Image 1 (spheres, rainbow, N blue to C red):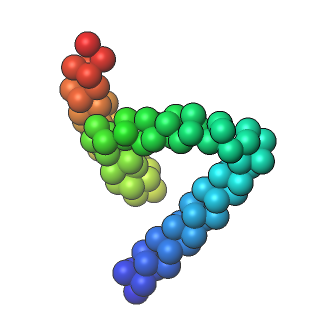
Image 2: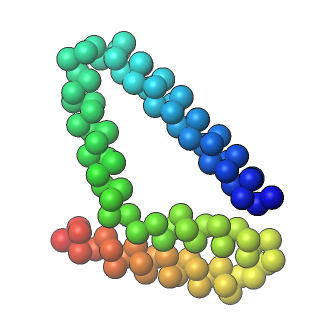
Amino acid sequence: MTQKKNLTFSLCEFSVIVITQFTIFRLVASNLGIAEIGVWSILVSSIQMSKLVDPGAVAGSLKYISLLSMKNDKRSIEGYVASSLFLVFIVYVPILF
């Protein structure tokens, strides 16, 4: 049952993303014109490239933090938040320098 629910959620999420992307692309094309789509594409692709170094620590830990918040386990929540911040710090500080 859980896999079916996850699949349904993933399909809905994918559909919303596709519809949103095509809507945004249509708005950019109509407002900026065809000549500026190249500049917009470079901007979007550079944002997507920055996600390559995302460790996923924050997104991954949110699931466990929400489950622990239902149990009022504040100590474990603090551990997840601290480890996520530590991992993000380790990954992004060298990139910033």
